[in-house]
Image (tube, rainbow, N blue to C red; front, top):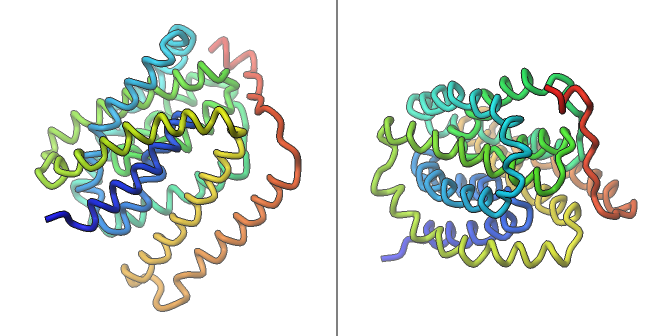
Length: 293
């Protein structure tokens, strides 16, 4: 018998795959906030990690011509991922699922709003900063399978050209998904319940990714990204409000004040974004120190 949550997961991952096909990231950051409304991280994460190994390898292969431009710059971040993934996997093993979902939403919400606000600030000492950033990214990914929003902010801030940006994204996310898969296997997370989700997700990706690639050729990329971030912000705010009630942190309708505040912020950001014309998006030139380091 087909369970309703697997059908919903197929629909959610189809939409997330369209976003991923258009932007090169966003699959987990769309899937996870919605799917966590009806399933736990411990069930969802292992299925997503295995799929993302293949998905990220594909992104890197498509952008392989830029691999030589970014491989050395991304290596400190990849090294930093290792301890972060170990810590994150331990957290997922030991912490109550409700609190894992809550911490996921708390971390995600400011990252999404930063992206929606178009925040950009180049790092001066790239090598040291990316090593520390990799540690935090490893924790975040192994607990939530999400790394696209913070990683995209960092890579955009460093002034990577479009092809280099996608190659760097593919390389780092392939490294983190592969290492997390190994950590999950060691921790015994790959259960029948998790693996059974994969056949419901794969067709959505195979259909959705090409659609996303088609859509982005006919739509301004920054506009598409901004709409996706707005949707994500509302979903995460709703999930956080629900969890405040479930965990007895805030009782009654007062818990939905989070959603109201986020809604007001997002409407303001949307108004600011659409009130000015947008031409082709240009990356910020990387400072000399970022390139030389």
